[in-house]
Length: 301
Picture (tube, one colour):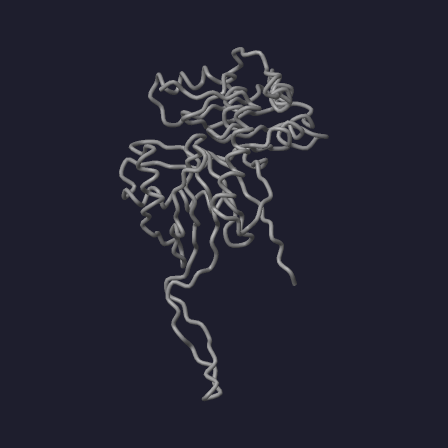
């Protein structure tokens, strides 16, 4: 059976907190210290740092391997099947590119072995392990596909709950939630959770479905007029841009539905065995388009 050449790559943003900064993150990728989770070990391999056409990115693979494995081999002379130790047997590896300009990362989903949640968790664990988890925090937050998210929200007949956990953005921010960004920075907060729940099971007074639809339909030449939005709505937009995670609970045909920003994680199809330069260029163009379509800006600091 011919295996498909293309795979699905997912997009997220790397959140740095505590003493983790850009330089330390780079060093954690370039010089990883392996971790063990259950019966498998993880590390970064095939690491390359690139500067091509003024685009800086790091290419590597997140590798899952078995430190202590025995495999069965054939001894033709004896006509027997024998057990042989095979240390550090590779199980699966997921190529990825990290593009500092957008705090963006694109990584390949490996079905059954390295699913998106697994990749994000092990990546963060490897970065933190580099510094013995000492005042270091790292997390990959999904960038939501706004059109899909907007369509799901549009199906809700009413909204009962809005919840989001957000982190300070770096280096990009969206003017639509700039007030939340300033609040986090002014208060010196690494993480803030915002939760709104309707009174007596009634509808929350929000235009969030329409707002997300308008944001999704933006183009570089057709921006939404900047204004201040309610803190819960702004937090969901912030999470959708990759600086947190959030969910909306509502009713659809008498059923209670939960819609998560992480469930609409933006992705693209590309070669599984793409050259680092090709994957870096592809991810850069998509992240740049997201920045332009959502009218995101670089922070002055």
